[in-house]
Amino acid sequence: MGDMGAHPGRIAASDLVALRDRMRLFTAERDWSGFHDPKSVLLALVGEVGELAELFQWLPAADAAKLGKAEPLHTRAGEEMSDVLLYLVLLADALDIDLAAAASAKLTQAALRYPAPAAPSRPATGLGEHG
Image (cartoon, rainbow, N blue to C red; front, side, top):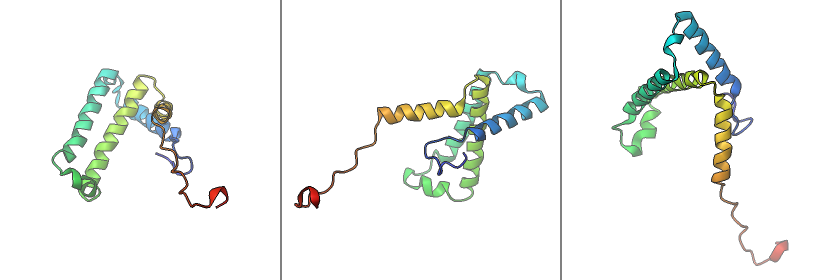
């Protein structure tokens, strides 16, 4: 979502807001808001995760990444992941959760809980501190 290379670890909130706004418009145009209570959206999300899992269910684990990058699985996986993302954005909207802020906070908590290993110490050269 967005250009994360410019700011590693940052989620482009504007991308999520744009998706949310498009979902709101899509829903309003079809008068579907009555069907988008949190429970119903969550169940739809779970169903879509199941459809994504089904694509990889019986693939050998050692080959899943390679097969997932090849057609037709690559396209199908993208379609199902899109469904998952859209339902997740819809659920966050139904619960009034800022998904980008929540995800960013979660990553910050994880970094504190699971710090990266320290850089390896400099190998001994026998030359002391000036080597």
